[in-house]
Amino acid sequence: MSSKLFSPIQFKSITLKNRIVVSPMCQYSSEDGFATDWHLVHLGSRAVGGAALIISEATAVSAEGRISPDDLGIYKDEHVEKLKQITDFIEAQGSVAGIQLAHAGRKASTYSSWKGHGLVPVDNGGWKTLGPSAIAFSDKYDTPLAMDESAIQKVIADFATAASRALAAGFKVIEIHAAHGYLVHQFLSPLSNQREDEYGGSFENRIRLLLEIIDSVKTVWPEHLPIFVRISATDWAENGWDKEQSVRLADTLLEKDVDLIDVSTGGSVSYAKIQVGPSYQVPFSAEIKKFTAMPTGAVGMITDAKQAESILENGEADLIIMAREFLRDPYFPLHAATELGDDLTWPVQYERAKPTK
Image 1 (tube, one colour):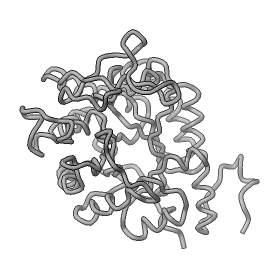
Image 2 (spheres, one colour):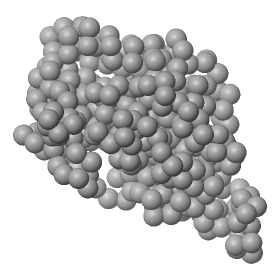
Image 3 (cartoon, helix red, strand yellow):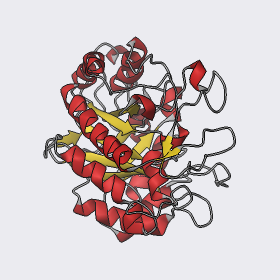
């Protein structure tokens, strides 16, 4: 009997062959947003390894929306060509190509992890950052410009243009990045959003930017293709965004015909005290599933097949979205299938290495 982990699942017209998803993982290997052969091999090898859905790293909808000068982007028409090569390869392996559209907001213009820490100065290739309010993430980050109406409308339009390019590049799933303290999360959290206009204050106002981005994306994204949203279900900080607001948001996103919430946590404030351990973010996914009809993806130190299977069997999530384990093992699904007793089809080029029963 097939495991839950290797059972298919459908979102609109897209069927995923199993429940294993490659989480967006920044590679900091682009120049001016362009994908390279590194991205082709990085994403393509995980498709060879059997993951059902491969989501690109946070892909900036504008140059100023990049986390670092080395981030992947989709803010130029010229970015599409290389991305199309990558999605074609992913699909040829029987996997689905997804893209995470993102804007870093006040956490933009920072160094890649191996190049330094904190703000990249303007005279060293950095730029002025934006945010809902003029509050810095920490003393190592820029104090952003509080966005006026025209800046907000530009971001909304940038997401739609990026979605149109993503479609041209062959992506079949869009994930809107509203987590980890980046721009949309900055609007959601009262710790970073202290506006007094229609985008701040009440829950309804703080979620407004996300809803307007979704509406804008849907003007160019086909109805038959899925839209996911990644959230941080808690800020892990007092008076911040929390699981109760996440449940409320999930119900609202269901009304917007969002197909799944990718449930992460944290990133909004530098002083958060996060209780890290195996499956530490899974309870937040389970909470949303318990109180809403929204499908969820679970993340957070999920590292082995039996752990992933248990999460699905317990009804705590619909997808298992993995990051670091895929850095250690691009072929995790092939190995997990063997462990769970599933007869997964291997690439013909690798079949001679398939374990025999």
